[in-house]
Length: 426
Picture 1 (cartoon, rainbow, N blue to C red):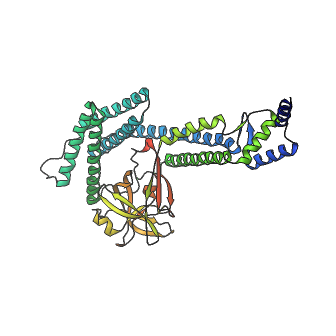
Picture 2: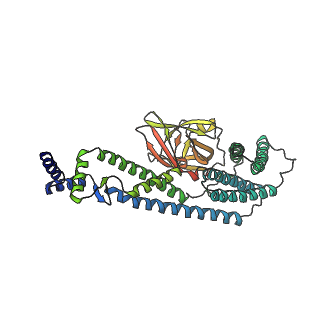
Picture 3: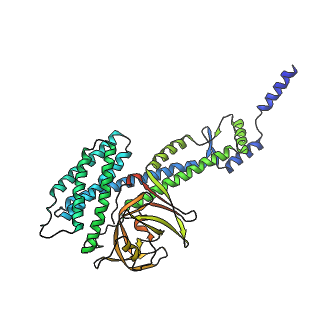
């Protein structure tokens, strides 16, 4: 009987409700820890802000889609309004089509459904038919009475080979074969761009600044979207770290237990059910973004990154997020075969310091690559000074979301994956 009596006493002590003082202390502690009661959980109050953040991302995605559709519609209208009545116009359109096809090839590899792949292939087939019509309508070359130089001959050879590769691509039966063809097409297209640029410099053609395109508003939307996604990842990772720390805090677990006894509930510390849905959505967003952290080295108090110019020349450039252009000294430009002519236009280049350098030559680099990120037809300012530092500036960096961590010597570039094959024009 004694044992039974003790058991009853112990049971009554265990089930006794907590005192008002203990409840108030527990409530105060959880409030200080930014926790609140929701459903069967004690969750971080900051979780309630995730809905608004994801709504902002959704809005940017809608804006980007609408802007992209509007840009493509304008391009189609422009192509229809301007008849291609000379070889130069036809060649420009052919190069545009090949770039669009390269973009679609990238989208095809990332497509997750049969309907999406079919849609992409339909678009590519439409472009292929247009390409074939343009190739067939290309004017005959000029009379052989005027001998063509080696550059013209090589350009003709490349165009002929690109036509052959396009026909091979249409008949390719395997992804490996298509990738091999695309790789050769890209290399030849880069060489064609370099040769065409060199010919324009020699003849003084194609150097007018009046025809330059304004900045694409979609670029700003892309950068804002990438920034939001990166911010969301930091926010959600921070919340997960907080939950881990709070779960290891005995005072917090005791406070929750106290309030559970008071309410007769069994609430637990942890995120709301919506957190898992947001995590899944964020992962999908991250899958659509390509990001790379590129190492830099310090020299003379500035950060230098290795930049590959025109696919073959590696130049150490100062990363200058405030500079308006990618810039080269006259000596560096000459070393890679970039020589301004009498008709080459002049521009003013603004440096991060605010200094404006007048009298720079405005030229175009066939390609600029940093890490795995590459862009074609990048505007470049050639400085009149022979010893001016090479700058990696806005004409390249503005096409990405940029995080410049000078302290740790890292340059992080990010872009939306569907844009990875884009070839923005100067």
